[in-house]
Length: 116
Length: 242
Image (cartoon, rainbow over all chains, first blue to last red; front, side):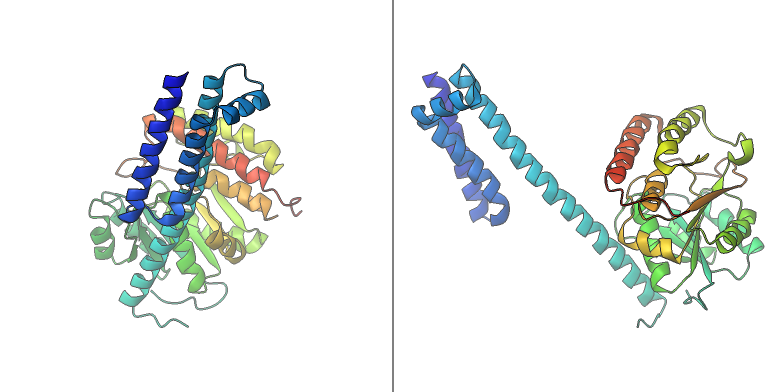
């Protein structure tokens, strides 16, 4: 149990630092780092606070604290992936609209259309 | 390419992706049947010389700077047609499967019925049509799924030979299924209380190139389309106009 929590602490901290460095180098935009930083913070706190982990375990009705941690990890990353799916979908829509607009403008310029 | 001369003017739209083998023949056929009709080829960033071949054949060609897939390609053409003021758009595939001699009939049906969409159907009136066995199974499945949703039978839901009027054009410029549009489009129309009709048309084997829906993509195609249909059903906004 202790080893699992320690591993989770190290992983969470490493992930959090990685995200922060990525933001600092502009590899990840600040608004997209929020989900990751929140997720790693939750995991870090849960892995360092036995009482809190016990409380969540009782709340979920799970008989095993490690299982609770794994469930929380899974749930947190599902939320992050959901948020990123929405962001990617919006970006794809924007890309398609821009591509179409660019093609139309290029076409009309080539054909010498006067736009009203 | 000229602007529409009036609200009844129509545009022939040909979405094309890697159709260098067939596109010139399609354009020549259209020119023989409808010599003065404006034709727009939308090249979906082909890797072959579709753009050059179509230009050499005398067509107006709008080239997309990135590959968008069939739906994005068709929607780009719809957007341009809408902006140029066209009242009707007839979509014809660039692979030569559709006979341009049927275009005037699709246009006439659009004008006479006032329906928002006319589908050129290879299976209408009990005709067997030309299609592969795998596609035939898919079409039967989609017929079964669409029948209760649309409240009427649709015999050729995957047909790309489609005419739309300006009302439908306005809707499609804002919302159009992007990957495999034919089937989802019917549900979009249903949601908007628009009407469609099928008329029998001749379909031929493709004159060149390859279908984008390969055998390995067929399963993905079916799942994607079914999901798209059900997502659109969830957005259902009211009953169909009678």
